[in-house]
Length: 177
Image (cartoon, rainbow, N blue to C red; front, side, top):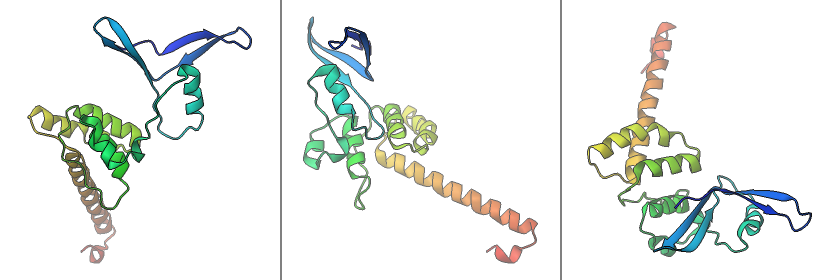
């Protein structure tokens, strides 16, 4: 259950009202009892003050540095988050091979990768990927990579054709091969 992300408290120092804002706040319920309150903070770049700020919110938290999770830890994940965790942990390694695990929440994973990588190509392939989902095709991270590669090849061919046209207009057809 989603909760408000803003809260107000009275400062012990001067009695003034202070405000806190979280990125996400949720209850975990078991029957009618609340068993946990989870607050999540997202970062696109390192903020060394985040841990201290969160201590002020909760005084107890678990920080998961996803790109540094070891393979054994990531292998215990079962949702789409496993695909994302593997991607961030291995993407800079030469031997990285995208996961062949089916992505269940394709649009959400595309948006997450777009947001966290800053790579607009995830947005650019979104429509084509979602059409594949509607046709009932199984989508994996490999499909993302394949579509991006095809998009890059098409862009390269388009740029080469534009250059050839410009050279032809200048009468330099000897440079077109």
